[in-house]
Amino acid sequence: MAQKAKPIELDVAVVNGVTLTASANRMFEPRVISEYDLSALDAVTAIDGAQSLGYCYQCGKCTAVCPVDTAGGDYSPRKVFRRTQLGIDLLDSPDLWLCTTCSNCLRVCPKEVNMISIMPAVREQAVADGRAPQELLTAFENTARYGNPLGEPARKRADWIRRAEVPVPIMSQLKAPVDVLWFVECYPAYHPRGKDASVALARVLHALGVDFGILGSEEKCSGDSQRMAGEAGLFEMLAEHNIKVLSKYAFNTVMVTDPHAFNAFRHEYPKHGGDWTTLHYTQYLVPRIAQMELIHPINRRVTFHDPCYLGRHNGEYDAPRELLQAIPGLELVEMGRCRENSYCCGGGGGGMWMDGFTSEHVGMRLSERRVQEALEWGAEVLAVTCPYEVSRFEDAVKSTGNAGLLQVVDIAELLAQSMGLVEARV
Ligand code: SF4
Ligand code: SF4
Image 1 (tube, helix red, strand yellow):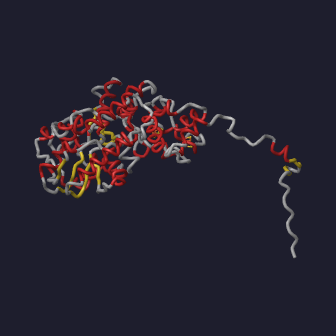
Image 2 (cartoon, rainbow, N blue to C red):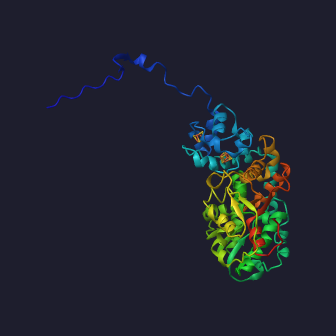
Image 3 (tube, rainbow, N blue to C red):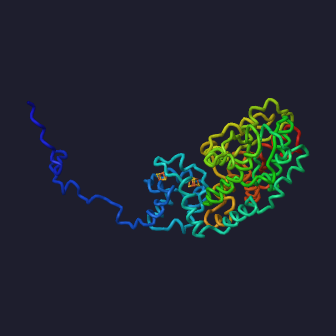
């Protein structure tokens, strides 16, 4: 019978022929971080949804891709973790409001520190404690009172259709099923440049013979950005309202203009009982390119800004590019930061309503950084397909002193121009 192996002496190690006793072997006491007061970090990671902040092991990959840091914000999940670890109360820190929930850090983080979950969870608590920036609270109040963050009257939500000069049926008046229920959203309904894109898209749909309708004043904000900014209760109220309204009507597909609404319809509304086939308008139009009479060339160098909530959050990078490449004469140039690694306009996660607050903590607006990039890559036109972006980038073109050098247009406007449905903008 084989002899049992002798147990290894755990308290002795032989290294290069030198026997080390346990005390010499260890040299140091086990290194623990309990010398720090971890109560600030523990308070955050105890919040449901924010646990993953504690997973950070400080590799720094996120800092390289965070648009807030690139714009001079001294910011990233790594830095948020470290400051919280050192005792700074995240609920009272500007750090809590600077993240745009663009999701680029999550894409590269080996530990899956998830700011898309952390930020809304911690912000919700700060909002409940009355510790949110006033600009954001105003946007919340407007949304709750009027159904849109701009504070515009609900009855004016469909006023833009008068400018369309083509029929834009409103479901409550139509009283008939449609193929496509177009969920327009707030900025395309109220903002002057958003309305330009809505008019263009309505004319494109009409030219294609699409059977569509809109909700008009029955529609309220999808609420997705308010949710990411910490107002989960308001989001639920809006979701329930919209789902109830949509459920009254018969249609095959929901088409949305806004990537934030797209995100809500795809990922959040189904949890509340609203589960429909939903397409961003670029996705709806791609299979119809052959039917579009794109006859007027647009001889311009155009670059495309991927919206975070269409690209990284929902994986659609190709549809906008296919539409742009179908326009005769148009030269599409890519910026270095594009597709999965696209930059952020600064409007997501409530950033749309916190420009004043953000400017106190970040060197320049994220939209200004992006406009500079577009120019560095030789673009004459910056094409967008998220309603937050037209106004943000147009302001940034002016504030960086580049008026006249770069035009910002929605893809719907470019298509309509090439089809001869609107006056040339570029
Ligand atoms: S990439 Fe993830 S683990 Fe690395 S520093 Fe950033 S948050 Fe921490
Ligand atoms: S989600 Fe975007 S803005 Fe927020 S920390 Fe990550 S990279 Fe920065």
